[in-house]
Length: 90
Image (cartoon, rainbow, N blue to C red; front, side):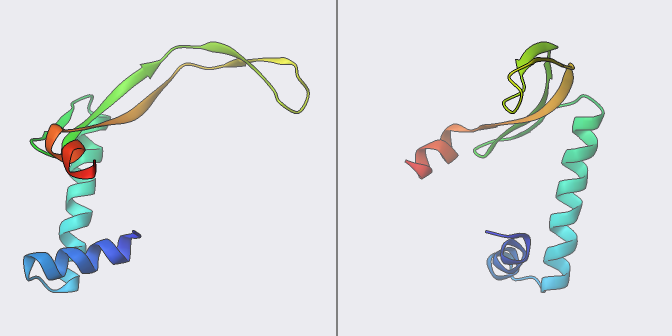
């Protein structure tokens, strides 16, 4: 599902106009992003938890040259599905 399809689905489900559904989706994405940048985690009961994890530096292999390369440490966004979401997918 692409963003426009999600906006259409939100509009139908919530009885909103597509413009209001787009604003709502963009506000949710911005709020989650801002919280992750601040180092917080966002838990939506029944849906899941968004969090930030630290990946340590490590050594990898360049598949083209087979030479060792150093991969820098970085922060990555993570999502862990909640129990209700996991159960509904199965």
